[in-house]
Length: 148
Image (tube, rainbow, N blue to C red; front, side, top):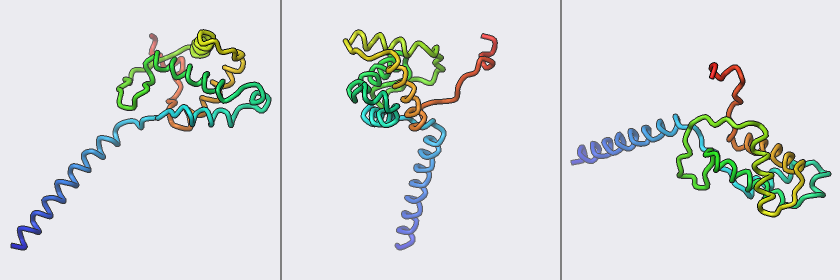
């Protein structure tokens, strides 16, 4: 009788080990998801802005700039408000000045009066936040375009 109990325990252990090993192997091959937390990003950016700029803008201004940038990324298809959404893995190449122009335009539509230079500085500092959470991949060089 005790042999059947030991055999059942061994079989349960083997099934659990194979199942956990399979899931672990699948997760190990997927890229880590970067989660953007707007509140955390606002604190991160506000703490790293130059002192002369912190006297000019408020947390609400920083929040407005970062929220507009999140809207831009969602419009480009590289970000999603829901963690479960599949945003795809296609390479998205954007000119350096396009996000800044888009964010400035969005802020003007919303009636925000934030200077263009301030927007540029906030977005530059936000890049450090993206690097901190692992959301930025390697830069694409001109020589990697494959003649396209």
